[in-house]
Image 1 (cartoon, helix red, strand yellow):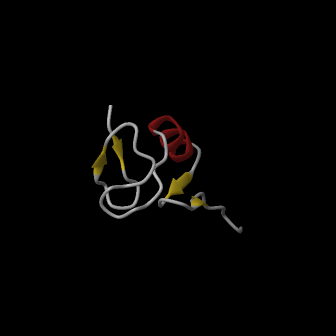
Image 2 (cartoon, rainbow, N blue to C red; image 1 turned 120 degrees about the horizontal axis):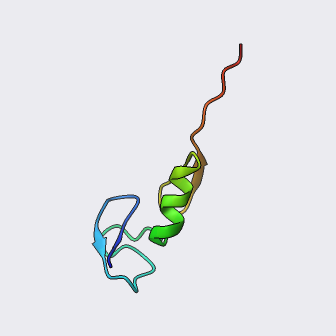
Length: 56
């Protein structure tokens, strides 16, 4: 199974820690999908909460 870079989308070897194309840190596929499912997005080294709240 390959790892895809969350920053540039480059396909990397499963054992890679950093993207061979842009150098971003790679997140394991399980962790990356769990974060997205919980309203978070990753961009290499930063995790951002992408949920919105209604201020009404």
